[in-house]
Image (cartoon, rainbow, N blue to C red):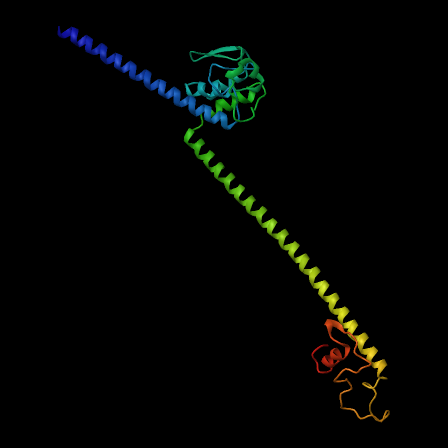
Length: 267
């Protein structure tokens, strides 16, 4: 009886051990599959749905990566990349590369899948899903530490974000600079207009002064010994005359304008 119990216990322990080993192997395979799928997607490789699907008589990135994760060396994997054929069995697993309908994420195979077609969220690196580079990338991914891969991806994403932010800042600054240039150009036009208006005013003042000089016979300049007119008194009229109330700039009469000029208000 004891022997039977011992045998039963040993058998149970072995069964549990086998079940545990199978569960661990399955979990490891699923983890390896997920890691390989992520790394191959980062390379924009298609035929990335499962390891059953293949195309173009070559190992896909996913197939090659899981092959290495499963125990095949990188050198053995690369040797398989050079062997073009429709089917191969490596380390007890058979891989297909020509089976209809092909790969469910490759646009070139879309019609064969109909409603079940699930396009990759990127443009496939190879038109038919796989090529020589697909297999080589998979062999390399198989020996790549996944945590290191994720750290690299995060760093690249952060760098891309920083670059995008810097680009946006430069574009904003460029727009602001263009706006300032436009404002400065408008300011220059305004200043030029004011200078032109001031020059026109000065020209008008001079014209009215000459006109006044002609009308009064130049008495505002004629003084001294040669004319017999004493100097030192204002030659400008202090009130308008009946014969000379002309309009001047800014709505003033010529007399008012000249009076302002004589006391230094306008120049």
